[in-house]
Length: 123
Image (cartoon, rainbow, N blue to C red):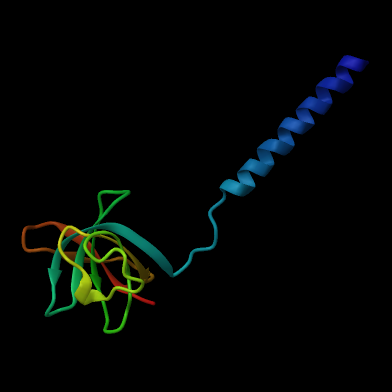
């Protein structure tokens, strides 16, 4: 009788632990904003765009930076600045930019044939 009670308590504890872990692993509500962290591959000052290679994946992002939007330079010449702007970014800097996610992914084909996700920087 003791063994049955002990086994049922262990089973109940394992079941509760499994359910809790599934609740924490469930996808959270989708946010329309997210952060892109990566290395700047190209800068187009005329169109105010940055081509950023994502640090954690193989994606390329073509980010349009409107006037007055700040970003964070995590590695580069101006990484000590409190609020760097688009003009302070240089090629090969590592940056973090808060971007607006749209409902569908807009893709842009670059001159060399690569495909980049098109985003808009926000602040």
